[in-house]
Image (cartoon, rainbow, N blue to C red; front, side, top):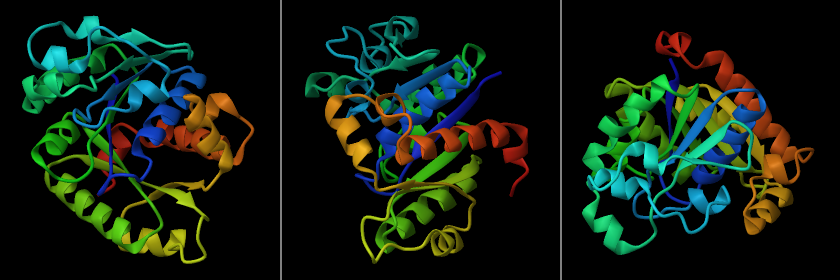
Length: 245
């Protein structure tokens, strides 16, 4: 059975969607069948990063009962990677009930090795519905104290909700001399540090091109960090994660 992993954050702008896209492609490169889901129903960006434009059916249509989940699964140009996109217009947002996310996402675990759920930031109802569609979670944060403390709060809530927290990703490290060091961030978060993604110009370039960096510049430091994250996820996802705490 596949792993359902919610990709979460305490606040917006941490690079959660970028992490979801690059992790999906990295896992695909390792030979795993992956489905990345845009569950951020109001700020949908995953399809743009994954190169999907002008899709007809989205997760919003499924949540509204107007389409089947199979109709919203799209193949991508990346090996073994599929995407369920979200709509970007307000008309779709208001008719989609986020509370239905768990019931439509959880059955996918029988069809994919990894299902990565790009969740909204924070702890509002739509974010909680998306996060609780997973069984495990990865928290994405930046090396700033306010961001780390918000992420710590998300981790506490998800633990209480029964999710296995695989750990956190420290993203955009090295852009400021005031960055919180990885060791200090891990002490505050009280969960394992999975990867440090450096502040890498290649990641920004890739974002502008609409191509995840692991495909755009696979030899860049940022791409290497995402590939290492994928390797670690394959080792710890599953039963071992459930007995970590």
